[in-house]
Length: 478
Image 1 (cartoon, one colour):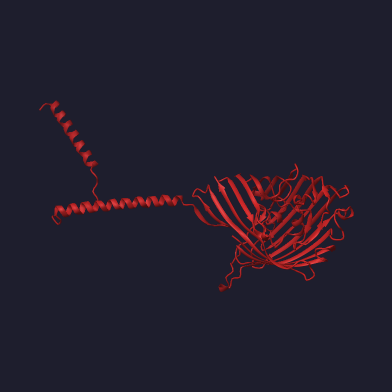
Image 2 (spheres, rainbow, N blue to C red):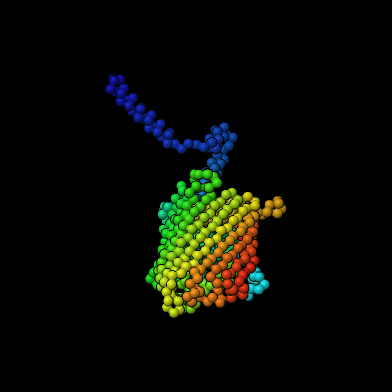
């Protein structure tokens, strides 16, 4: 055989071997069970018929197993789509990627108010607040909240807003919410130390209003701010004129990250409002920020404008705030002033008058807890007791002692120029409050307050120049 023929023969053999090898490689690999069946058949332990039956049964089981795997895979895929759920200062649902969140919660305040025996008002039990809220986040950056209140037998909207949050230091809030003024005012009633807010804060500060606000925080220096434009009236009320109020608050904790440990809990703040008013009492009383009257914590009216008083001028507020937390001890205080320019009395005479007030309070946790404070929001937050109430284990929750002194003073001109009736009201009030708070857990609090008020003059609604009221509250939030 010549060389050429040998080469052709070797090439043909190589092709055949390669082809046969690839065929063998493509043959499905037998399982251990199939190999075992082959061995049993070769050794004639089982017959050909038994071999085929067993092999068929094995194939069916393999198919069933594959179907089960597919079901398991579908369940895992479905579980990945189920939103996370739980509780964190409210019940929540959120998608796995946390782009969409839904949160709901609420509060119930069951109160008692008892007056001294000479007071004309009746002592009573009542529900001061009964609120349910729904809040959420859409696409990570668009937040919303809707919160109605059904307390005191009324139903009204408290909060209803949208917040655009792409950057923590520059967020935009639109809707009805608290105007940025005063530490005690912007702090939720769930977390203040007393059952009612202080005398000046309750009467001189704006509350919820409709508007738009730029706000944010810069954590390295504990800076928080809010600047907004509002109607300048009251929640759930339209604007009576074309004018709007500019409201601003800036707060800082300068020693939060550095400085002496004694000063790290020091908080300072400043608030202001500015706007022009065009309204008449009593036709437009609902549009006054305080309906044209001033009240004590016991709802006793100690000042009210006479009918026919007109405010056709500027209204300015300024306020300063301080809070200092040192372990279980805290000190809080504020001063504020409202200047009313171009007030007109019922005879058309114009005057510039003002109202001012201040308070200072002390609190101490005898069980060692610390006052919770959010520097990013510049507000006080929920208290978490070291031990929740469980008498079977000898645990009694957290206990806090509180005391507060407040005063409110009006210009003499309110009476001298006929803006109010001197025989029924007063222009100078001092209030002193002591309280005990019992935190059974982070969602339940029992409060007791005794409030003593001294009026500079006789007040008709108190039927005296003083007022003593005992307050109690069972508070539940979720």
